[in-house]
Image 1: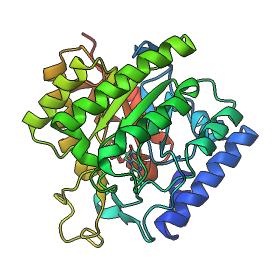
Image 2: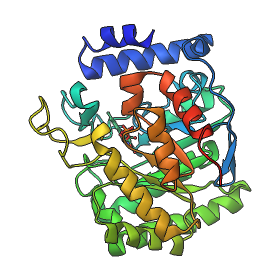
Image 3: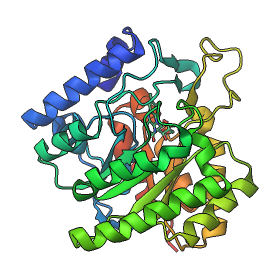
Image 4: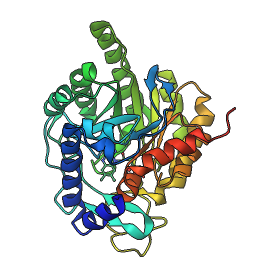
Length: 341
Ligand SMILES: Cc1cc2nc3c(=O)[nH]c(=O)nc-3n(C[C@H](O)[C@H](O)[C@H](O)COP(=O)(O)O)c2cc1C
């Protein structure tokens, strides 16, 4: 059934089809109809970051930036849903067009630039949702906040979303906000993580609940740089790492229409790079922090590959666009079929 929907949706511009799909998933969610679109995935409970997930396959950030369709996505069978990236103030993002499909490569290039309605709106959407499962809220900085003051934006968002999130993701890896990725390195990273950790402790006391913090990183670092991130995460007591965001590389799409568009590349071409990042992190972290893997899962076996590389959970975005909700169950089944031990 998704093949038919895809044929229609792919006739529209990527952003129109994105907006329409979000509306449909949201409306289906309100009517409680989305369970009919996909067979419920097998239960495959896992506990990660102290949270109990019904299955380890989640929706990656960026599809539901404003939390407009939380119930709808949950009903499709995701074990968890991550909304955002949200910024303190609403902002329009980059001029359109800003999403491009590369269907021959099962890939997407986007330079959305954190278009979103702001953190207050998102909190209201979360309050209005009936979903009681695991909800991640992904936070970022406004494009016009100087990167030296980025910490302030993350803290504003953390304060506001804290009471409403199962975990909070700190996005320092979008390629479409100038300077953002510099926060992944050296003193900038340490200062950010330390400030977040101090605030997390204060909020834990205030709310009587520790909300885990996950840091989302890019696949474009050298192995040495990735290892340094892992050390910083351990030193500052972070709770998880999400690997990865989109890549600036164009390996695997050279010569295809739209391959030269500016932005982050996702889908099949980023798979190996992302899995390598997971592997390097797993070696360095040695189980001290869980890894949530995203990047290029377009078939169930790719989800299992991420778990084999050391991840505890996976997330999908581009694969969901190309394969539809059936990919959720396929991924859960492939992980369930992995040899244990
Ligand atoms: C159109 C689009 C928008 C995205 N927006 C965000 C975002 O706002 N925040 C974020 O952390 N990641 C964002 N991502 C990255 C995805 O969450 C994911 O990390 C990445 O696409 C790799 O997974 P995939 O290959 O399954 O798509 C976006 C990806 C796409 C394709």
